[in-house]
Image (tube, rainbow, N blue to C red):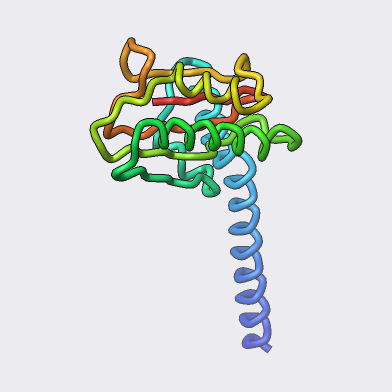
Length: 159
């Protein structure tokens, strides 16, 4: 009789531990994990972005350019801007990090050329394209990532 009571109590304790673990995981997943993602979304509006935020956007594609011309890279970035916009505009996404573009050579990519390509060869509204530079010039410096970010109908090229 005492063995049956001990087995019942052990079973109840195991079920309680599993239930509490599931409950705590749900709380963590719904509140804390999403708050970190929300933090990453909100820091863009405060004029900053952290590459550590990429872990919350596993669909982000990393693209590296080696031994390519500036024209090729500028055309490719213009295409990636359109791709990012089209993937997100008709969804309920308010924020998404689409691409992490890395240029592995000493080339400066001029943003005015990207704007020219988008205006000339597409119907993308360049008023929806925002730039954030590492420097105070109108170009992206080499050997650093350029993040292509969708943010509430705008595309941000962030370095």
